[in-house]
Image (tube, rainbow, N blue to C red):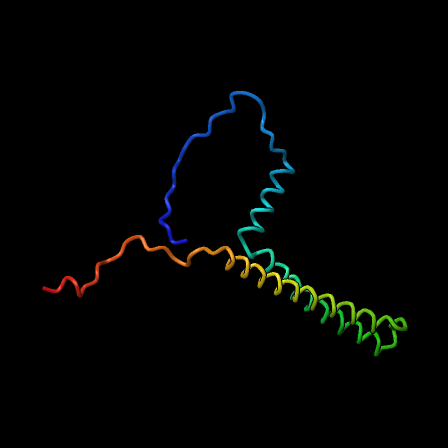
Amino acid sequence: MGFKNTTVEFDVQEREAGVSKWSGSALIQYAITNIAAFSAVPMQLVTLAGFCSLIGALILGVQTLANYWAGRAVEGFTTVILLILLTGSIIMMSLGIIGYYISKIYDEVKGRPRYFISRTVKNRAQNIP
């Protein structure tokens, strides 16, 4: 948000009594929640996966068509494979893009200011003698 950052070093002391109530799975779930809440990276990863899937679909589509034209393809297999691959990759890319838009809308609805003013300078016109 534009604030100056600093580091504070400290030593973590051992727990005096009892054990932590955080299990390993709870910590993992907490990490996933924080990544999803404060970052749009998961949506970008879905879009990237959809793009990679589309490239794979095009490669496999070319291979499937080559097998079809060579007469080595099973009847009906070519059409089904091409439709599934292309549709699945387009859906993944679309979901990633929609998710990215939703994350931007979420950021906007939080109502956080775009910047903070730490100090202001008085109007120069008032300082003229």
